[in-house]
Image (cartoon, rainbow, N blue to C red; front, top):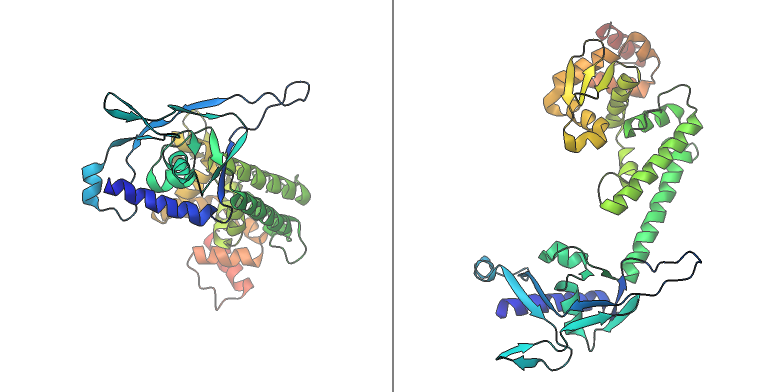
Length: 352
């Protein structure tokens, strides 16, 4: 049992480092107590679960590959609260099952470490991310650790990010999106389709963008997928990507590019020439998929064609110098030695 003991000692050490300052581990039900139609809390149902589990073998981080190959597979664990019962020459847990009658329950690191180890690292009833991520414990469970520090950290980080988001979108002249042109470009690049519509006011664009970021953040917190608030705050630092995505969205808004629903394909509206087919798994983020495809380094020809379809001399005149410098770089035109007038003229010739 040497390899099993190595895993036990490693996990016990981690538990003491994480929860030792409290001297206990508190488990709570993952689902809150329900209220009935009258507003009163419903009775808490008893959870009865086996003291015996079958799980994949878990190994300490320094376990040799030879031991993993030798002892890998399934293993059986039991926790016995009292002296184990011997029956037919084999020891059995006493009792055979455990009860969780309350909404939360506290376990002592001093007197119940073996039980804590069993619940956090072996029992499928308890959701414990560290055991899942580090040792491959099966996900799921009706209980979870009520980690006060982690919970407060998540709340604090979320509020700090939301404060930064509020400043970025609604702040004063020092905020990244104070300028309306920057606001619309970034909102368009993020995926707010109404951002380039002249009928939509700047304040409405700000509100749409703010709600879109928060909605994506809520979705990320729920299923761990997609972009959230921190991703947006990082995103607004990359002017080149923002300008490129805004140009692609502008092509869609001006109906130069359209999405052919029956064929799940982006095409040029005038010729029905296909740009890219959107696979099943990316149809919920089809605009992002189009951007990823067109802006990939291996698709420079497709990106060049799209620019030529969208950009006109009038289009150039409507954009600020910062955008003009970005486009000049895309066209491999020398930027450092050129004035704004010279760059605009060079681009007008390029897109005449």
